[in-house]
Length: 110
Image (cartoon, rainbow, N blue to C red; front, top):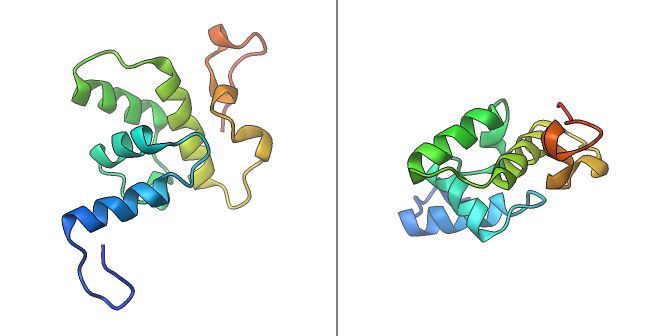
């Protein structure tokens, strides 16, 4: 990552810029932005075409624990947000992306 003048950013500056960009995603705060950074996601556009289930599985493997399913739902929402030029505002709430078992009307698919 570089500044607009082509000057390379320090690793710290690059991470800070990435975390700010990632927090543009609805439902993504500092903690989830950091989780995405740890998975190699440095900007919103890096999520285009990614499989949120794979991201979640990788996140659990990195953490070496079973991470709360809400993170899976946020990852689903984040990939949707990054992949759509004009995302539907109704689909930009992480809880909209819950599994069928957690949502009586069933899960959404993007």
